[in-house]
Image 1 (cartoon, helix red, strand yellow):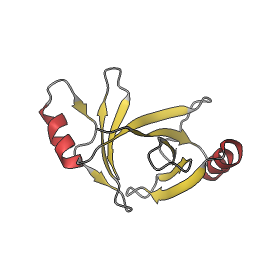
Image 2 (cartoon, rainbow, N blue to C red; image 1 turned 180 degrees about the vertical axis):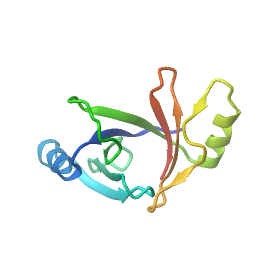
Image 3 (tube, rainbow, N blue to C red; image 1 turned 135 degrees about the vertical axis):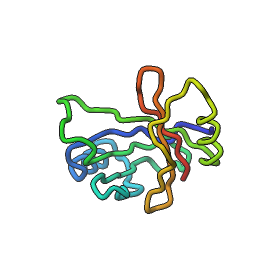
Length: 126
């Protein structure tokens, strides 16, 4: 594991959120990715540094959002997603959320586990 890769924020309107983060925070849109499920849309924003922690905006995850922002997950960069998946599967005290590694159309690969308070932690390979 190398770094915190991104923080995922669930949003109601992807276009509005992208505009806000670009105009107010001067973040740059680095990638837009449709999820393989055909419903969720993702946008990754950041500053110019290639080794930074990015913001991932997630539209379509849930129709019932609270009035406050919802942080969906944080992601840890890994070099070998298969190796990490096998390592996590071998641990007795870790609960997997995903039953397999997910591959997005742009080649990003990931899986989620639960933390001790049921927070979502993503293992992520670009």
